[in-house]
Amino acid sequence: MVDSVKPHISHKSFLTLLKGTLADRILLAVSLAAIAAAWFVVQAVVASGPAVAEVYHGKVLLATYPLPLAGEPAKSFKIEGELGSAEILLDADGVRMLSSPCSAQRCVYSGAHRHAGDMIACVPNRILITIRGSAKSRFDAIVE
Image 1 (cartoon, rainbow, N blue to C red):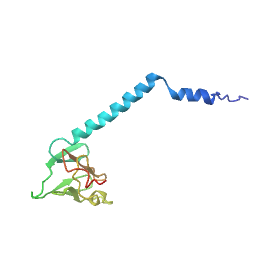
Image 2: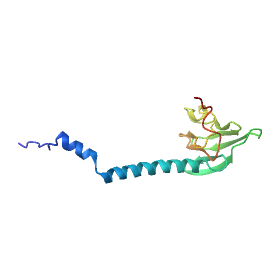
Image 3: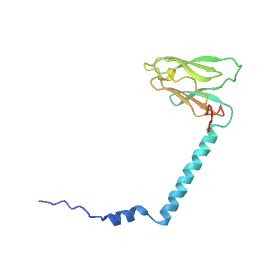
Image 4: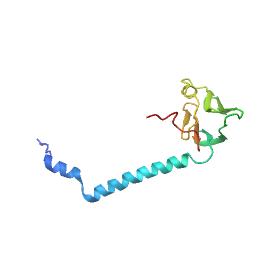
C-alpha cells in the first residue's frame, strides 16, 4: 500500500513566497503602469477623427457611414446577414437597428448608439455595428 505524501509548507514560509523580491515589485509596478498607459492610448485612438459607424458581417467590413449631425437627413439601409435582412437607421440620435430577423431582438431593443466605442451586435445574424471617432461625451451630466 502506498501512502500519499503531502509536502509540508509552514505558514511563515508561504507568506515569504507571496512577498516576492524588490525586482518582482518593480516588475509589477511597471506592468500596471504599461497597462494603464495602453488603455489611454487605445481610448484616444478609438475617439479620434469624425464619428462614423462601421458595419460588419462576420469579420468583413461592409460599409462605413458618417454619423449625421443635427439637421442632417436620416439614412436608412438594409444589410444581408446569415438569417436575412436587417434594417439600420442613422439619424441625429446615432445609429440603431430598426429590424432584424433574429428571434431575441436584443439588437433592436438596444436603441440608438452614438458614443465612440459603442457597439450593436446581432449575433444570430452575424451583424456588428461599431462607432469610431469623436462623438458626444459619454456623460449626460456631472454633479457634485
